[in-house]
Amino acid sequence: MKHERERHFVTAPVGSFFGYRPGPRDAHHARVSLEPRREFLQGQDRVHGGILASLADTTAVWLVYPELDRGRSLTSIEFKLNFLRPATLAGGELVADATLVKLGRTIALVDVAVAQGGELVAKGLFTYLVIEPPAARA
View 1 (cartoon, helix red, strand yellow):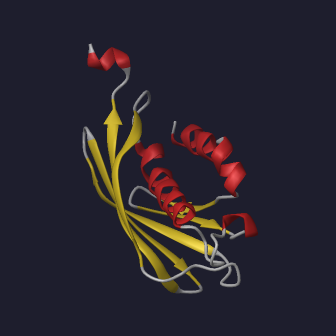
View 2 (cartoon, rainbow, N blue to C red; view 1 turned 180 degrees about the horizontal axis):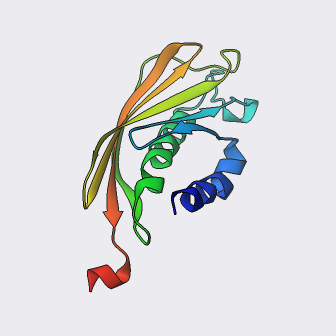
């Protein structure tokens, strides 16, 4: 089951579009990396904050989704991401590390750090609603 969910994550269209590279993961930690591209830059030659937010969210999902029981899914309900320094094209690979804070029956909470060249560029907290399969809700 877990491998099936991991495979689903890796083949999702958004991952191919952005070029996410899922790294190691276990029940408490996960890593996803991304090589910045010119298309990811905003007007001041910095990686757009939305790209960093997407990378952080994706890493949190890479951590939690494979741990859910069959039929359960999740959806974002809130996140806060602090941008601490600019990420640039020249800075190289962006690496996001997620740490599970809590995986409950209805809520998952994940802490995510995004770094470039060993420097922290963003830090966030992501909250997800864990959705039961329709039969379990009846």
